[in-house]
Amino acid sequence: MNIKHSKLEAINLDAYYGDFHALKSINIAMEEKAVTAFIGPSGCGKSTFLRTFNRMNDYIDGFRIEGQILLDGRDIYTDDVRVDELRKEVGMVFQKPNPFPKTIYENVVYGLRIQGIKDKKILQETCEKSLQQAALWNEVKDKLDKSALALSGGQQQRLCIARALAIQPSVILMDEPASALDPISTAKIEDLIYELKKDYTIVIVTHNMQQAGRVSDHTAFFYMGELVEYAKTKTMFTSPKDTRTQNYITGRFG
Amino acid sequence: MRVQEKIIEGLLWLSAAITILITVSIIWVLLSESVLFFSEVSIVRFLTEKEWTPLFAEKKFGIMPLVAGTFLTTVIAIAVALPIGLTIAIYLNEYANARFKTFIKPLLEVLATIPTVVYGFFALTVVTPFLQSFIPGLAGFNALSAGIVMGIMIIPMISSLSEDAISAVPRSLREAAYGMGSTRLQTAFGVMVPAASSGILVSVILAISRAVGETMIVAIAAGQQPRLTLNPLVPIETITTYIVQVSLGDVPHGSLEYRTIFAAGMTLFVFTFLLNNLSFWIKKKYQEKYD
Image (cartoon, rainbow over all chains, first blue to last red; front, top):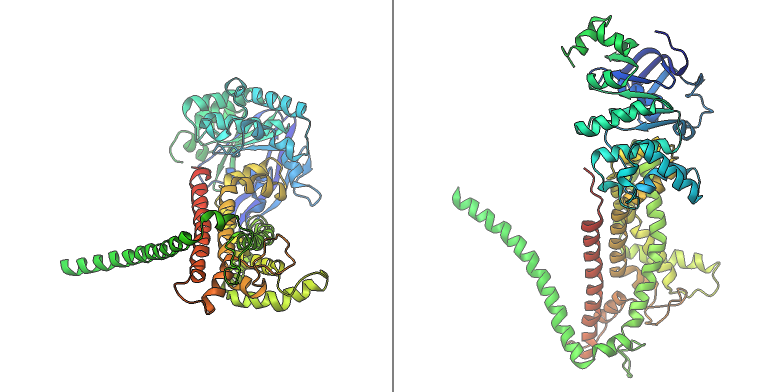
């Protein structure tokens, strides 16, 4: 498949949890300002793979990788890379909404605060802008000082997206961002992803075939730690090359 | 079979009943003797007089010097135990690897198994001379070294309970913090500690309650001179120490002097009772609900 400008790249990537070989020589390049979906049955390694892009697996005892992960052509696993700086560039949205037990406002500006930004004007402007980008502003603008835990699940997830946007990353990783949400909230998140890809490179893990079909430009199918097939989403869903892909997307297993 | 069941049930009920009965009778003894005391000494006098000299010819019954002594040693103990205990809790949670943690946590709790009398003479014979080497005005018996050693004793209480509180914070919050580019320190102090604050507060209150009731260390190392002061360098007396002093002395049973220990005991009981209830209430009210 032709990638015009590769934002993220994995080169001969192997990953292990202790003795367990979780990812097997993965090679993939992901298009800038596009949505790439990772699909595959549970335990196929797609979440593990997603988490290598912001080194979220670093704290897991016994986890290690071999090979390279490149962000804008630069290896992010070399010693001179600061993990906290990397994560400001590569934001993440998790499976379950995980707002901090703070106010809505404090949740959104958290990333700025830890960078030492104290200017009230900047904080407020960023807060409004991020909430608008996350299509949440109108619902919460009158209760920014209320606890984020009082929001509904779907609102919490959009808040988490706003929180991630506030630090202006260039990549957003989404680990099944809608799997814990109802259909209406899911639709809102999907619309949002469609909007966001104008400015951001998005990688999304999903269990939901229809969702992958709706939101993504490219799809990668993982099975047992291997990247089986990687193609334009349309191509993959209409004429998969590998029989395992075909079986999975037609619902024969998984 | 039926009869056996009944007997077992009866035994279980009995052991529960005995516990409650003992608690009630302790409170009853405290109350009834205190009432006799307060029929002779008014509560106003008890709370407002500035001296406590029930064993002297000229008797004064102001509890405040004893309360001040208790307060002083407790504050010093918490000032030592809270920063150290919390630091340990954060270290174990955010920095230490799992194997080190399982090794170090029981080791810390050994601190809690040292008999308090040992802590007491440790304060008197080691800490006080050490402090005297650079604090010239420090008396041989003083609130400072007793408070410090008491603080060391309650470190495991704070570190252990706070550690439990912090590790009860859902993993997803830690991931959220790291995912936003937080350093470990920012994650610990900006997210984990605030999210666990109710549990940490409870650990502190229980530690205070423990320090208020602590007897042996202060009896040995803080002196036995009731004094209305917040100066940590001079001998003082706590409520508990006074009770020990009178219980072991030759004060005749049934006398007013004898009843002072019940009044003092009642005061102590009210303090610890309130503190324990406060911690229970905080736990119920402020514990963050995560699903």
